[in-house]
Amino acid sequence: MHAVGNSSVRVAGDSISLREDIVWNELALQTTHGDSYTDLIRLFKIREVLGPVFGSEDLCILLYSLIRREVPRTLVELGTGLGVSALWMAQAVKENGVGHVYTLDDGRDFDQSLDCLAKVDELLTPELHPMTKGGIEEHLARFSTACGLTEHLTFRRATFGDDGDDLLAPESCYFGDGTIDLLLADFAHDPESIMNILAFFLPRMSDCSSIFIDGASTHLSSYLVLERIVEQLNRSKMPARFLEVKSKDQRWELFQIVSQRTFRLIHLVERRERAQNSTAWIRIEPTDWKPHPPSKLH
Image (cartoon, rainbow, N blue to C red; front, side):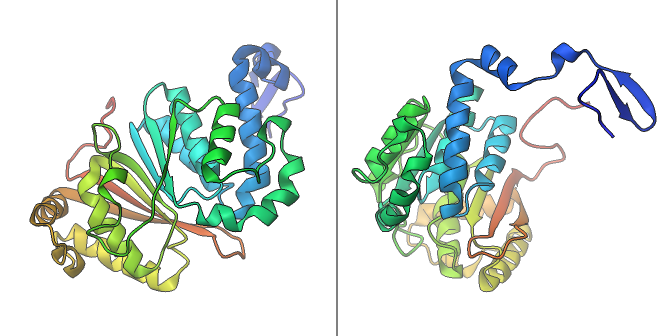
């Protein structure tokens, strides 16, 4: 049992002395981190109020932690929703001092959520009001400015296509000079959409990267498709959907990726009875004897 109210903590029967001045409290955090602390308070409030609308209140924290650990450079979100995940990812990028978040959406879900936003508007801090004024661009710009994240987050209005050849228009596909290190797909999770996401984005992913598909793991048909597809990929088998891609260059890139990468599938399932209660995580790594991303070995 850990006792925080005094200067010792009991662990496995031993008493470990702790100096009381290293016990962090709210005042110490505020003094040490200044504006960063204030920004985090705003983000926690956004998470608390808006996160449950699309079930992102816990996923955004997981993504924040993963980004802080692995320091990805290019992060892409398909489906902005209310911007909770995008803002938390941008905060992690800001703290890392490197990277950028691109979030794409057509604004449909935001426009359909205006009644809900009007009800919770007063629960947020004044600089975030009013959420119902303007569209998704104005909403995200106001939030990112209030949280000091404008330099780390880019919004693009985009409509997602219905096949793996033109899932995104060419003008929406520029994400800096490199490949994508983290992709969060939160616009569809049916089997056909999953195959289109993989066919379109696998050639654009970094050697060591992650693809998150929100809602897929508790959609039974999608769960089964993901299990089957990842099994095929790890046997260096090209799914028929990949062979249907029209671009010869894209088919060749898919072939190279399937033959040179290892894929790990993790189903992140919540113990909650709600529609959006899972995320499928596909981890992509080089087929190698060393762990990735590259780090110090001991």
